[in-house]
Image (cartoon, rainbow, N blue to C red; front, side):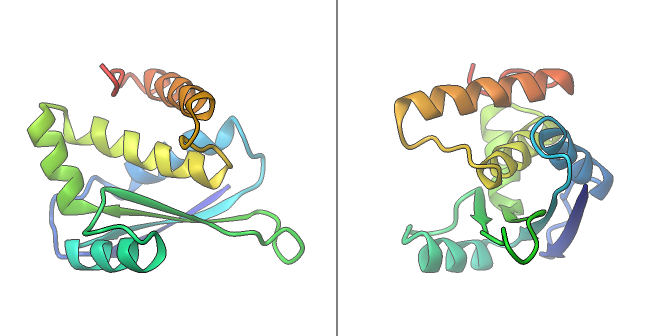
Length: 146
């Protein structure tokens, strides 16, 4: 397993890089024996641009996942997870969550998207939330959906 980290923000409230790697690898361990992905931490402007360009959303969002299909060229390459640092930190503070607990949830959530999980349909959403809860509990973080 390989998790690449890119820091593209001046925000100094980014968790330790080792934590980000640990959270992504924890999600990967149960689902992919060999995998490579990138977690990119961005500022609000890049988060907004990516969301508007690729997801047709409005404004920045806390986490985006960009899965790729490299099955023939590099089957272990999963894609990129993008976390908007200022939004992640603001949400944690607003919701009274520890920063690490919220960031762990976002990184795991994005990683699960790279692994094919989705929450568009009710059944898929329930399964994805179940896996997120289990992975976060393994790391001693509280249920993010309570």
